[in-house]
Length: 260
Image 1 (cartoon, rainbow, N blue to C red):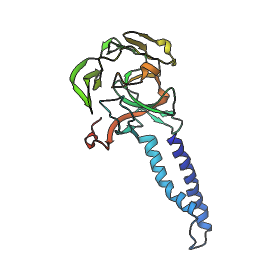
Image 2: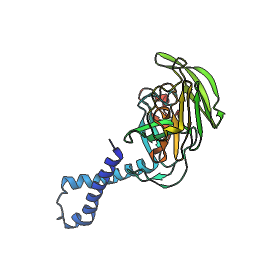
Image 3: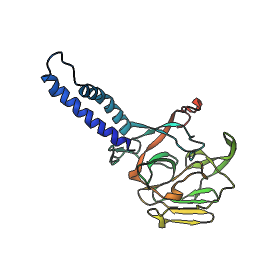
């Protein structure tokens, strides 16, 4: 469901009702006569819908984390906020960038439209920028020949099981990842995505060169994430924004504000 499109349609409908009521119907209506219900509700909802549309389209948008692919950074049930202007101002619905304000940086947690089905929103971490060479072999990440160092932490507990827990340095960004030693290193099923010829797979992992205008994304839960290893690169036009804050979690109120 394209919520942005639905919101835009509602904005246009209620806006037209408000304009007609404000500049025409109000002047012709006899004194004391009540507004028709559709005029009353339409004109009343227009300012509210306008504020929501502007906030959601240009400033921040809320999302709910549906899967564990970004554990331990983000957990299932986290409600997060996404900055919509960090990477530039885009026109609502068509998502076309009109003002350049910045670009994704390595280590950012980014929301984007899934390349294989743009009606779906995905969230992963940026590990490869345009033109960079990303290698993931034996569960170690290398970018442009520089090893992204890992430091072992105390095992991460998720309800009933423990997973090996590491801190990884993505350039200047330090973040946590989960790695399951018994899971295979190789990518079992990769799709036929655009620029697939710029990736090479083997029993130890993969080696990709990120094309211009695209980004390579990976989940922090490395062995339980369908990401660029499988479905390819994220084009700039699919970017939604940068995730930066957990504002609620029904199951754990301590999660609020725990992500930056």
